[in-house]
Amino acid sequence: MIVMKFGGSSLEAAPAIERVAGIVSEALVRKPVVVVSAMGTTTQQLLTMGEEAAAGEPGKKERALERLRALREMHEREFAALLPASAQDELRQILGCHFREMADLLGQLSAAGEFGPESVDALSSFGERLSSRLIALVFRHFGMDAAHVDARCVVLTDGRHKAATPLYSETYARARDKILPLISQGKVPVLGGFIGSTENGVTTTLGRGGSDFTAAVIGAGIAAEEIQIWTDVDGVMTCDPKLVPEARRVKTISFAEAAELAYFGAKVLHPSTLLPAMEKNIPVVVLNSRRPEITGTRIVADAVPCSSVIKAISCKRGISIVNIRSTRMLMAHGFLHRIFELFSRAETAVDMLASSEVSVSLTIDDPARLPEICRALREFSEVSVEQDQAIVCIVGDNLRYTPGVAARAFGALQGINIRMISQGASLLNLGFVVAARDAEKTVKLLHQEFFRNVDPAVFD
Ligand code: ADP
Ligand code: ASP
Ligand code: MG
Image 1: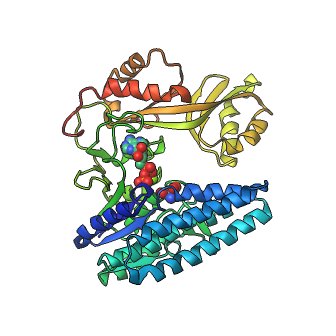
Image 2: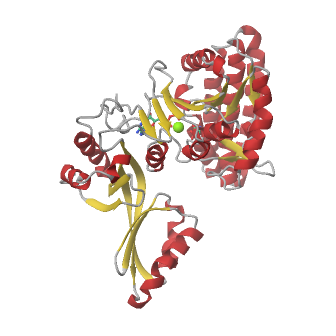
Image 3: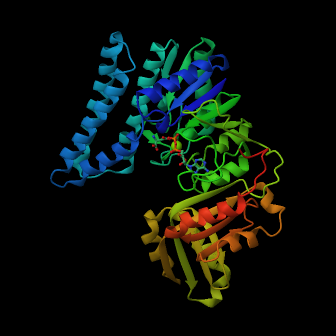
């Protein structure tokens, strides 16, 4: 059994979906379970129309409904092109009931004038609910015995809307109960990624990009032999090819290295994807749905020996630095404790940290609760915040064994104002905080320095 996950960029229009059907057909002997994202940019469209509907400004609700109509037309046009005349009624019936529900929801948002986290999940779930139904239908007409499974009946989560966490053992049990019998009957199960539900049946989502995470959870649940993440690039690359077009493919990388990259901004994998795979030791393979002949990146427990110092560079924008200076010297021993308690209570994760006797600088990627955090911090310290920062990390297992890496990195980054540095916490990551406007240049300079000559056994 394998899990094959196809991202929105692999499902943007009819030819892409046809390619995906071809890729799955070729893999039937491996007993695939298919996890799909919403088509193209559907999730973003849904979020935008939710904001518009709730805005309460003249003309905005109409704009939301217009956007919904366009989304329906796009789905209808692309799927109608893939289906025979005999299936067009079923297509319209599926579209009809889903889009009616979405229009009702937009009406409710508009009346309430609010687009809260529960509504965000309810509305954004429609992208995957729809794509999974329609893709199962298309697969049947391409000769596969596809069976749609509502992922919300399998992925049980906590109630943390917009970033829910699966309840693993219950989800694994449901994956086995609902998916394995289908596979034994020779069917191809098709599920939507990204979505789940609470014990009370309320729809949740795993956060943006969460379909990768769904694939990993399902793979771990059914003890798949491999989890494949099909996307629009050749694999995990030495950095985001949108920033550096000459980025190289990394043929193989360890779970720990890839997890570090994903956490620090490599969008190719949702940050939590590797946890379930690591726990059950299931290889994750990242592949290009436009060039299926390329072998992609194999993410496994132990990286093969590599003579290059680093494997890849990640970049995460939208970072804020919080500088905190104690106003009472004598309470230094309780200072960090108090700070962390505040961040923890506000459910705000701290990524990087630097401290001296009376001051601490730390970074966060979610400023939503920063005003209340600052208010509480100011009771015992002076606080300043610098927004629009980025964390650039060089990641590789060899960092811990190779002397002089920091000197090389600093040498390459002369002229860039480095605001914070972190090495050691994870052993395989050296991170720099720079102003967001310097991030691209920082990545380019580091890429030039570290990937001029690379080990051909590991890089393409
Ligand atoms: P999907 O729709 O398949 O989920 P995403 O857009 O979420 O695709 O992720 C793929 C994108 O991740 C690529 O197009 C690329 O721009 C970006 N990316 C960022 N860092 C990396 C990296 N190190 N290797 C590959 N892709 C990366
Ligand atoms: N459709 C969701 C998103 O755009 C989930 C995913 O694609 O992984 O965030
Ligand atoms: Mg993605």
